Image (cartoon, rainbow, N blue to C red; front, side):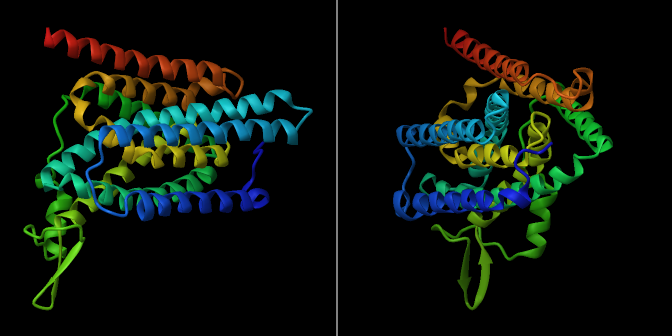
Length: 323
């Protein structure tokens, strides 16, 4: 049973979307009205702000459910834990996005003062595509065969990540880059924050535009994994939507906070791969094994252990090399 069906709670979905748009407008129009290089301190503060907002939302959700359904005291705890698990999974999987951001910005030579602008518009696109993915997933994943298919897909993705050699993405060799060169006139020498320039009456796209397209495409690919992963933890579209959005909103500040220490996360990919395998098994097998619902407290503990241990091993390895 869906606790928050869209046809009954659409005003909440609308209100939450308006809140997100307001926060984005506040971000770009007030705090980042002037282009500047985002410092680690500023990024850390914003990361904390988004995490606190997500926590506040989860707390309000808990009290609302407990007030609305007083005869079901365990429901509020269940939904709050599902939101927390979804947020942790999406936030963890976002580390892969951070690595891609660094590669794309480095390849296209995007100055640090303009990186926030590219990420801002990239996040807007990501929010739209995630909403579409979640809407489709809420219908498709109602069928058992589709759930098993995506579960197997997550397991395969996790295994491939475990076995990958760690070869870096090379934008110049991608089919996307070749396609963009055929479709657009590109001015690699253009400076400034614009996504296109006009020369002699002809429009050219800039490196900023190319970087934005690359970021949007990679997020689409990541969404194929991350959205089903959250649906493995909860069947509530509202929780999938809100936890996903909160995690994405904090992705920009997370990048600027971690950009200088990415080399210290050598083993995190193994933790992420293990998480994908676990949630894939949960979708395809474990839920049925536990009578339709694998305990959410166990899920949260397993996910935090996998991610946390991979981060600890990464830091130990990094400091061991320095000695």
